[in-house]
Every structure is written in C-alpha cells, then in structure tokens.
Length: 243
Length: 252
Image (cartoon, rainbow over all chains, first blue to last red):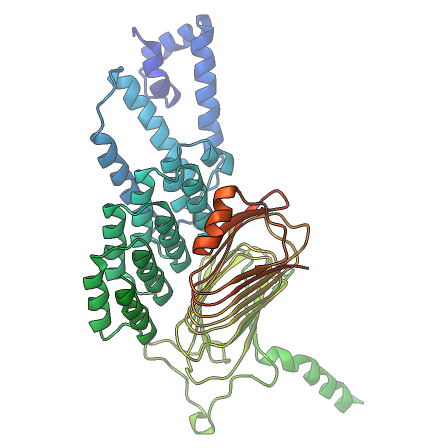
C-alpha cells in the first residue's frame, strides 16, 4: 500500500482486508496529516448518517438523474486534468455520495451556498418545496447571470418541474438572462409541451421580449390547437403582431 | 331539563356534523378544482375542513340515498361534497360537484404545506387568514386575498387579482405573486426586510416604500418597467408581477 490517501474511503467503509486495515491503522498512528484527513472524512460520514431521510416527491428522482446526465455530458466535453485517476474517482464518489445524501435528506442551506452556481441549481431543483426551488433559481441567476450552463439548467427546469410557479420563475429567469439562440429554442420547445395557461402566456411574452422571430410558427400552431384556452390564443395572436 | 340539555348538546355538536378531520400535522395537502376555499392557520395537529355556515354543500332531494361521484371515479367520502385521500403525510382533496356553491374553511397546522390548483370559471376568491404554512396557488380565474400573510408563497392566477397584507415577512425560501390580467396589491410592515423584484409589461408600478436599487436597475425601471430593490437592507426574494395591470406595493 504505497499511497494511503487512496484507500482512506475503503478503510472508512470497512472494505479493506484485515491485513490492509491493520496496516492502515498503524499508518494513521504515525502520520498526523493522514490521520487528520481521515478524521475529517469520518466526521463528514458520521454526520451524513444523521440526516433524516425525506419523502422524495414523485418526479424528483427523475429530475435529479436528468441533471446528473446533463452534468456528465457537459463535463465530458472538457479536457481532463492530469491527476491520479483513483484520486479523482474517489473525490467524485465522495461528492456524488454527499450529493445523494443531501438529495435524500435535505441538508443545511449552508452546504448549498458553498457550491458553484450550477451545482447549486442542481441541488435546489431536488428540493421538495416549490418556494425553495424558486429561491434556488433567484440565487443561481443572481450569482451567475451570464453563465450559459445556467440557461440550460433553467430550460430543463422549465421542461420538467411539476410546479407551475417554479416553471414560471424559470421563464422569467431565462428572459432576464440571455437572448441566445439556445434559450429561444428552449423556450419554444417548452411552449410545445406546456399545459398551464399562466406559464404558456409567460413563455409567449418571453419569446416576444427576446424578439424570437422563429417563434411565429410556434405561436400559429398554438392558435390552431383546439385544446388551448382562448385567452392564451389571444396572447399568441398579440405576440404574432409584436414580432 | 333533560330536553334542554339534549337540545344544547345538539347545538354544540351541529358544527361538527358537517366537517371532515384529517390527522396530519406535517407534509402537504393539495386541493384540485375546489372552487371556493378559505385557508386558516391554527395551532392544532389536525387539518379540519368544514363548509362555511350558510354555504354548505347540499345534495339534491332527488339524490336521497345516492352517492355523488365524479367522472374520474372519485366518491364523496366526507359527506361534504369532497373526495379526500391521504397517503402517508400527503393528502389530496378534490371537489366532486362542479356547480357546488359551498365555501370550505380549511384549518391547517403550521407544518403542512398547501397546494391549490383550480382551472375553471367556477373558481372563487381564495382567502387565507393567519397562515404560517407554505402556500402555492396555481389558478386561472380565482382572485386571491391573503390576510396576515407571512410566506413562503408562490401564487399565480391568469385573470384574478392578488391582494396580500403581510403581518411579517418570513425570511425562509421565497415569495412570488403573479397575475397576468389583473392587479397585484401588496402591503408589508414598514420594518420588513426583502429583495423586491417588480415587473409589469403593460401596467404601472406604485409604491410608498423607500427601495434601495442600483443605478442599472433604476434605468431599467424607466425603460422596461422592471426593477429590483432592497427594502430595509434586503432579505428574502419577493417577486411581484402583473403582465397587463398595475402593481401596488405599500407599507403598513
């Protein structure tokens, strides 16, 4: 066992053989830095055991997985830094583990505030409370108002969150942040699937606000649909005139 | 004397005959297409739903001995025109009679979050009094009146007005009030703390609050009728929006 740091987590979880565990134990006695790192990890792990398991809402897990996939896709396009592979995997595992624990147990808000903006938004969207998720959108947008990843994240919220008020806030946030082609397309796609009139109207107005010329066709389709409320069609008609 | 006692007992019991009690002090209660509701905060550990006096649900005489059912297969399992289903700490309430004029008074413990959704023209004013729970409303036609509100709140209505009087502002989570076609009128205590975000496309904004906003926001206020301002140094995110009508923000 040349690098004891690499097997801290397996040791913590009791996954080492008896011989390896004994070696690790001896090493901890003579290596104060390693011992401190181990104690910090252990404390974190012990604390996580005390987080109460919350009742996840029906679609929260699905949303969380969508977010993880989105994160993975995004990061796989970036060049990898040259660091020890095992170290990287261990760190990722700890982060993932903590993320899942947080997701299951609704960890303290301080944990959220210390994360990067996109991770923040990811974590906020797993909250059971709608007003908490709305707060998350406001916080993330305030911190990183020009980050294209946040726009992507907001579009995903708009397409998947079960609360009309959260989707409404996502529309307003997208509208306030950027007028990129991606955000316009995202809004248009959301309009196709959106069923709640107040959100439909907000999307129409957002598309007009960012002067999305290609929204005309989408507005016309909406007007032609029988199941759409008359007052939503009126808003689309008004939007057509304003574009 | 016995007759008097019996009559008195009946009088006391009368209000209990038409009410439904749910043993729940945490979690969430969701209302779907219940036209007319008043939510009241209370210190008990049960949710109590009762028709308002004089506006209670009445079965037609011809329906004597029959059960009210809905197209979705729901049944009136409360005797007051509602279908109530509880699973764990989640309760769902639906109104069966679309022409019912009953207003339901719902007393809610502080730990129970409320979700209210109503899409039809039959939606009446949603009233809240002394509510400490999280409240979310998604409506198409209902007006919303909030008395002694604190938040957290997420309220949206397409055609209704929103009038909210806050006794204090809860600094957890967020508050958002949004009407598409009608005005939003909000009163807050003069010492409340909030980050206000006001927005209207076609209306005007009126306030007597001394809001502290940055230079950029001040310019935006003139051009796009959107502004952000801190009140008393800032606090919880408090969003007020009316797309086609005016916004009133006043201090008490």
